[in-house]
Length: 256
Image (cartoon, rainbow, N blue to C red; front, side, top):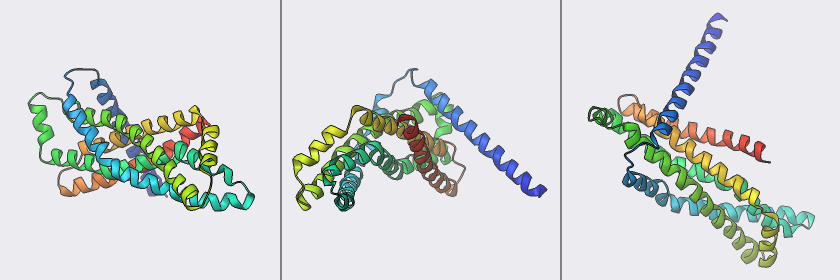
């Protein structure tokens, strides 16, 4: 029993220490944002990597998400004679929940893992230490552009996800199932408000911060060796995905 309590206490202290290091890391990055030099080239390169190179997977996920929501929703609503509510059901599900969450998860899997591996390889090859020796802040040079790019790219990808997802629902509802296009879009126009859109954008902004923050932290402090890089990448993807889902619940409960 004593050993069990000791183990729980040790685990709790490790979690607290890790959280402290995480927030200190974020604080140092935020402090470096307003200070020169401003490396716009690094920032644009990361926007391209996180945002533009994720367009295909976001578009593909969005269209099939909208299609399956419309297909399932139509047969569920038809039991109660409420097929006219299909448009609002698809749009609100995507804009408030599925758009931000799935965009965050897709970016985590495609770009977040690569960010962790890239920084981890730089750490084990001592390139980050070399920047320190040359008097260049590794956080400012490597981490800050990636977090700034995530804060810009993920909300834009979420907007794209929302639009494509709604059109995916339109393809199934109108073109496949014969529903009126006016009914579909008219219901969306009357049901979706600015509050719903703002909620989705706030979520996507938080998720963009979570993905880039966790993934750069794990890569920046990778342990030595190839095994350390693989462990850091796996840990970053799992931790980012879990935090996205947890954060989604709390933002939803606050903004209802």
